[in-house]
Length: 505
Image (cartoon, rainbow, N blue to C red; front, side, top):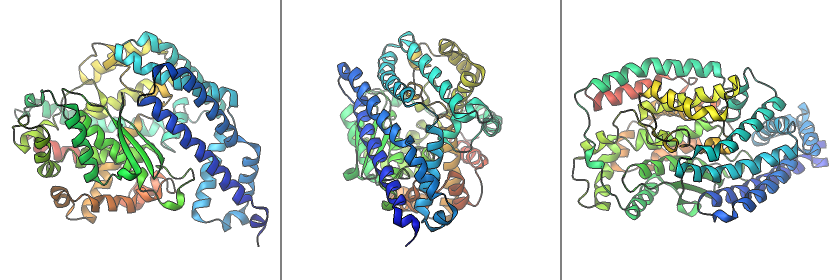
């Protein structure tokens, strides 16, 4: 019997991780409830409760004994005895521990209460386009985030420190190069599309669509994707999101617009992609902090894959357009090809979550550049609306009429998620590269989509991506599956092929 087994260090360590995970799950339910209909008058007390529980979880995550257990488990002889799951768990916990232990518990608890209140205030501010009421909260969140960066220590640039939390190893230097390359290659494609005489007709989409019918069709499509309703649910919120409590309880939300039949549909498919990832993580990872996606970029690759590669394909609508028509009798009296082209129209728009695949990346670049300015150049919260509007004018040629469709449109900053937005474009790149391999390994890929047999695709993704949770790093996944590191040229090739056909370039 080894020393490690005798003193029970591994058992104490895994029990602590399990307890932290239990706190995370309880907090996730409270957050989910807060964003899906909790009474507004309870917001302040709920935020305090979230802050108190988060503070207790933070203390467990930074306790001296956890550091001691990690040091013991990292001893070469002991580490060699660990299985792959425990080695990865030690490595991930060490990274989080070293970062979190630098933050005073009181400071962290104050921050959690602030962001919890800010998310609720953001919902109200967005509804009334009242940035002035939200600005003080955002200003404080930026101040706290800067304090955290100082305590963590700057990686390259201040913004690099935030990027690494969502996409480990990613830097502004890499993103500047990748985003610069995307701009260079996609701008000429956008210009050619704008000049094409073969513009899709979209007028037929401008109708009133019953919310209940939209909900029924969204539930139907989730079922077709392989979403397990015994392990998840669909609700409504101001901004669509997914919450994975554990693989047996993954909750997603969408937003229904009565004048747009596609918004809730594609939002549901997008969040459904996140949910499939979380629902299909290996059972031996459940109860550990490895039972989640390995990075936000990889997570977004799955939501973007299901929403765009599958959900906006001609093969998909060849199978499901008839079902959509049945849910809205007499309203969609155009051909499936016309509907497909209309749902893939490329044009500048103000709202990120409703943007087309091609211009979507410009929405992300705008947010990325603003976040860099906040943390690397010291831009203030009071300057953001004007800066936002100027960048939309520069990049997309349009300006928001009010802050509700401008700087207030995303929930992310109210929760302190600075550094998250680049994950969406990285997700597009990962998705295109995965798809290239998937098409070669499943030669009947598009025939399966056209038949509505999506389960073999889900099974391939489960085998290659989902099951591993956080057991493998983003670079290990992309190189292990495709044989190459992340390459944005796959996304460019995918977009060129698709939109050359749609616009007959």
